[in-house]
Structures are given as C-alpha cells and as structure tokens.
Image (cartoon, rainbow, N blue to C red):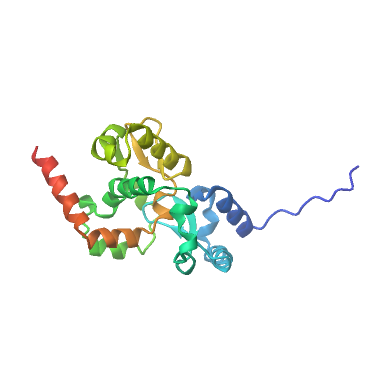
Length: 214
C-alpha cells in the first residue's frame, strides 16, 4: 500500500480560477457556481489581487478574464503584442468585432438605440446571447478587406490565428461566427462607444442601406 498522500479536492473558486487561467474562458454551464454571489465575489477578489478581472457579457455564453484597466494601461501590457498579433491581424479582429458583435448591440429587432443598449448591457441577462447569432463568410470578408491586409496567404494565416486563439469559430469558412473570447476579452462598452462617436457607425449604416437598395 502506497504511503503517498492523496491531495485534497480543490475548493470551487480555485477550480474555476484554474480552468479560466488554463483555457482563457469557461462556458456558463461549466461554471454555474458563479451564479452564487459569494463564490463570484471570491473569484473576482482573487483575480483582482493579481491584476485580472472576471468578465462576462449579456450576449455571450462564456466567462473570460482580462487585465484590469490599471494594468492594461501600462504600455508593456499591450495585449495585441502579448498575443503576438501584428497590426493587420489586430485590424482584422476589430473588423470581425464590428461584423459579428456590434449587430447584437444595435439590433433593430429589439428596437434598442445605442444609448439604451449601453445601459441594458450593464445588466447581465444570461439568456440574451441566445437571441443573436451573426455570421460572415470568408469570401465576403476577403473581398472587402483581403488585399488591404496583405493578400490571400496572410489573410488565411490571420483567420487561422484568430480561430486558434478563440476569437472566432467556424467549421466551414462560409459561416464564421464570434468565438468564446470575442465578447469577453474585448471591452465591448469601450469599443461600441468609440464606434458610436466616430464616423465608423455612419459608414456602417450607409453600407447597410446601400446593400438593401441593391
């Protein structure tokens, strides 16, 4: 009989934290304990002590983690660089966020203005994500931006990189959708605010109207 001691089972917050650190995200059904305010606070407090925050989105079925604002503002912690993204890959990620995530936040089906939506997103609705699924095809994406991002070879490598990292998901390239960390790693409020206050929103609306008119 072995004298080796059997390790005590990990407590629930430790289990959740370790899985988030390993994977970078957790499906809601695999972390239902986070619905308990005490467990969630314990997880949040532990992350806070090491410069991380637990994040979720009203329109995502996942939890994720990202740097707290004070840490993220340090130039040494620029996360696109730490994720080994060059400028073109990062540009493609922003484009994909606009194509796949922004429509959920400005859905006319829900008749929400950008300002109203900004407020409702602060209240977590664990079922809201089920109402929205945006997708785009590789061909459409490449036709619009492929040449500007370096041509077919580089474009394919960027798409593959973003899929491996969990920003996008697809089984067939004609149906690219937001991946597990697209909603939770990117600060959606900041991105949506930037787009709303810039000419990008106007251009997107104009483009949508042009498509409807064809």
